[in-house]
View 1: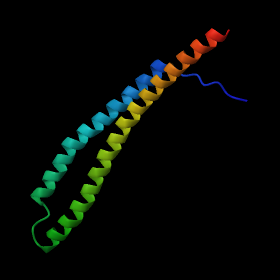
View 2 (view 1 turned 180 degrees about the vertical axis):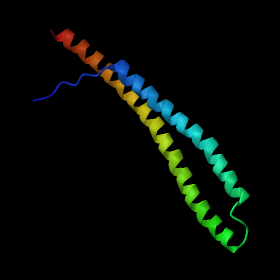
View 3 (view 1 turned 30 degrees about the vertical axis):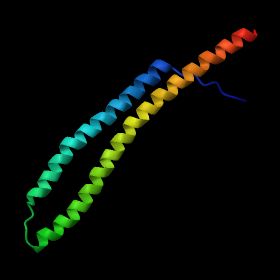
View 4 (view 1 turned 90 degrees about the horizontal axis):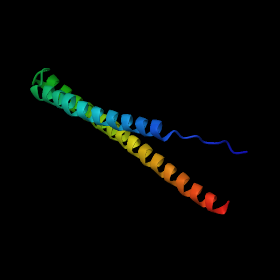
Length: 106
């Protein structure tokens, strides 16, 4: 027994656009906030002594991993929106072609 799948193309494509927009906003925030975090590290507010140097090494590694993860997450969210939009367009086109074939058979 197959369940019917009902796709609302307009709503699905609108949701896809919102996801793409969210990805772009996350990337923009990553660029500005990430740049601020990087410049704060360059200022080395924790000092330049041995303890400050140790903190800097650990901070730089952790901060870079966090900033990379942030960028990747933003890219994936934007990519998901694009993929949903394309899948919706493909589904609509497949439905249209299938309807044409069925109409010719009947």
